[in-house]
Length: 209
Length: 221
Image (cartoon, rainbow over all chains, first blue to last red; front, side):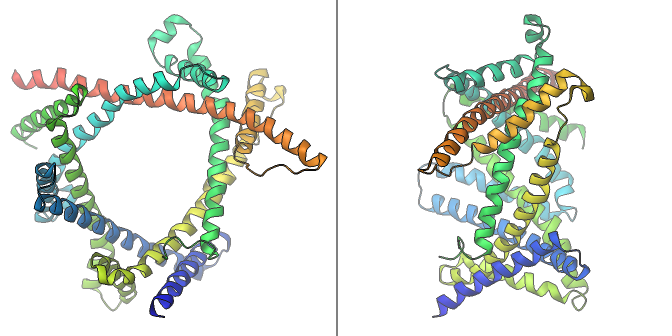
């Protein structure tokens, strides 16, 4: 009985808050605007708390790994040390994220790691390109031609092969590629609205199990 | 930052860059260490941003400085505590209310954003002139292609089956042809996206290699 009430309450909260926020998109009303702003402020606070919860979960998972001496537990030690150091440096200085120590970690540890990890994917993309661009059908041939023109249109080598390749690249990006992308965006937006309405109308209840 | 901290920073960056690039030789402890350091710093930074950009200025300080004026903030505070209760297995059910709240607000924003941020501007942007007198034949053909591409690519996501009647079969055949055309436009888009992704990743790689080649010798002078 208690569980059933909890579920009904959760569904009511979702529908109520959802309709109140959604109404402001269609109705010009000062009261509704203020209600929406308040609900958005609360949601931002809750999203921040959810992020902290995620961080606590990361710490708990790696602590369990260390305690159980599971494979790779030593790496977890470094992960927790890095996490703890950044958090400690941020809380020791009232400037927080803007403190020189945190900025140093961000600039000299986080940024190079992120950039190099993404740069590393260049090699794997190259091998993926070989598999994806093998001409097996008309579809893959079209993708190959578009990909090669856009790729070569951005480098001097392409200009050396064909002096009009940059114009061809611009044309592909401006017209057929934009057309396809627009169709995808519209399809995704329609799907988002449909899925959202199903939850707001109580047909789908992904958060209540 | 002082010269010494810059110097140490450049060497730390270089060491981490080499550790990540060592993955090209295969999975190894140096890469794994760098990977875990990356996750650690990313999570730590996210915690600080969440606290200093949202929780402190929007919840903690208003409640501490003027609790009576900001009494409504008790609601998100309670919801936050219920969310934190999810850490305890026996209290997991209590976390349903804040999740329901977040879902409701998130879905409403997604619907509003999809309608007013995607559908209407994209439809407006597709209403283009196909008259050569407006911008020449090149633009007219391009615009026509863009309109056909948009409509046919959208038709690719139309999954409703055809009926058994003559009209239904005719309609089904027409949609199938549109879907085929739409698939080709989507392939052009994928090819262009793929090429742009390759270029951006290569630029990053060149940037990292340039850093190793130019910055490290500078510190040795």
